[in-house]
Image 1 (cartoon, helix red, strand yellow):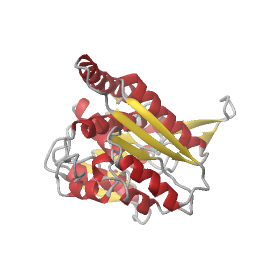
Image 2 (cartoon, helix red, strand yellow):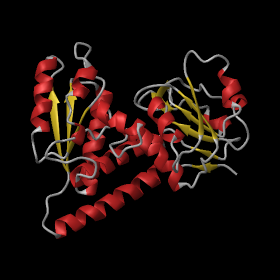
Image 3 (spheres, rainbow, N blue to C red):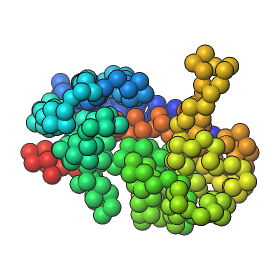
Image 4 (cartoon, rainbow, N blue to C red):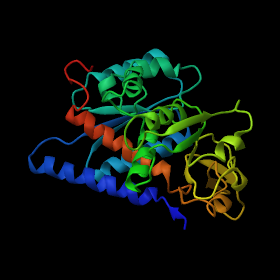
Length: 299
């Protein structure tokens, strides 16, 4: 029987756990964790994501700061803002919401974030720590995926995992994380992408499929075996005149038909996306504690 992997339920549980820690800090008259977010320009989707993160901070008792900057800002000016946050001891961690305007190099921006405050887990130092299996901030979405697998007690040891999509934000890191000798992990992971020939031949052998391509209904029922575990990271707009806003959100997986064969599956929305924010809050709490870095040097 298929079981829905409820990202809303798990994200709420994580927020409740964090809120309890914050209450203890407040009872001891200690300052609470502080997350800052830099939002460049007027991208509606980016603004929605950032506002969701700010709202989540309030829910768990974190302090938050939103820094809104015009899309005409220069890369040098943006990096100056980042350095201010790097040197602000009242800020435990911060994010720069992506994507950025085309005239700004995202890699340069990320490289200027202090690794000890990089709660998105994108800085090369944190990526290197992930690859070497050293303690550090893990990218929020892959971290959230592993949390879902763990909290639903889904077995990964020795399982065939097919990751579809090779982005630096999801596909590549989750491939590394699930290959580690740990739980969730210790899996045999195959990374598929746009140049993969006969994708179906790989997905049919998969015990777990993680789809992160941004292509509507890429994974169909004839591409999966009975009992497969489906983690759908896709968040795509599909025109739907019956909806007030004119569209509905769907994933990379044909949920209606694939769910009939799956043992576990994440819905879209209500699955992985909510876990991304919960993971960001977890990372911010670790930044506050100084778990991975000496706060004096940031490395």
